[in-house]
Image 1: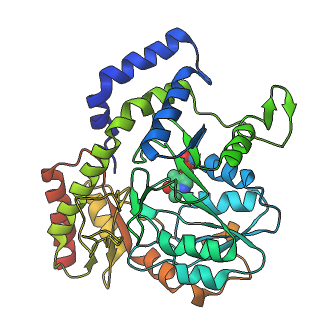
Image 2 (image 1 turned 45 degrees about the vertical axis):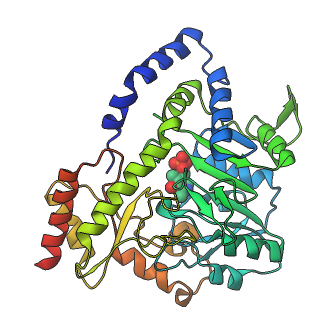
Image 3 (image 1 turned 180 degrees about the horizontal axis):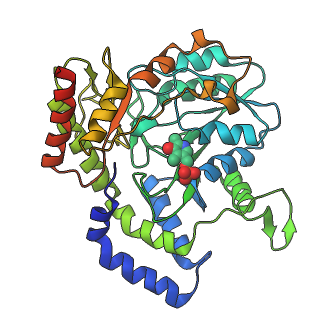
Length: 383
Ligand SMILES: *Cc1c(COP(=O)(O)O)cnc(C)c1O
């Protein structure tokens, strides 16, 4: 699904040298490299505060702790996403409220958010799923109307830019009150282990969060709040410093591959190619060259009126990896079922879990690979 070896070859000298320097300096934790990466990411994202942490799941949890959400507060998020989002809500004894997504973007449906709001609702967690930005015009408007916090799960969307209807452009992660990302190796900006970060433009929240990641300490050995231990280590920071300047070119390579996939699948029965939907000029179902409204963390097709699972098997039999993200709606997962949910409220997610298939997507895909993958898919569907 990803080719991290090919990507490494291009930054090998820099990465190897700087890892050696970290070892020579022995500043493995909280070293200067972590601080430099933090500053560089703040500049890249144009966000006031980046707080590095141990992984993307921690980033979400710490963001929610920082906002001071309390037991019983309701947090609305998408039914169709990776479980980390709902997991941390539940861990903090908040009440997850899962809602349906849009059939074209796979992202949280603003109308469904509106319907789910109660007096207990305190926050919304949009996930920029597969690298496409959720409808932030609507989500921010709903949040303002009902005085809710917005926590962006930017684990799959880093490097993308949202253009608001009024033309204003903001990088994802810095749109909501707080953002969270993951540097898991296969993410668009990945390190060689675990890593994550929290983003905010709010000085007070940033201060609170910096204490939370460090055992609730604001002054050494004075524990003012219950915190956690969540750190990015220096070795991961040097890898991220080598990759950050290349993130835009990585995302361009992903977009170029997505375009080639889309072209090959044009007009093929049983396939719905990913729809790019933003407010930018070329948003009408094409993939734009000029903005970053979709950074293709995944390239995900819908397979309609055909046997998706048999296609998965056919691809695997031909040596082509593929993924089904995600096969079970969160509201049907044992850990997250709840009497509040009604199957009729999740028509889109219930359908998507049967139809989606993600094809290999990374920065090193070449024309020959794309040709082989697309002809193998088409051959199966034409049978
Ligand atoms: C990867 C991911 C996470 C969790 O990140 P980890 O670093 O693996 O903890 C959270 N949300 C989404 C949408 C993700 O894709």
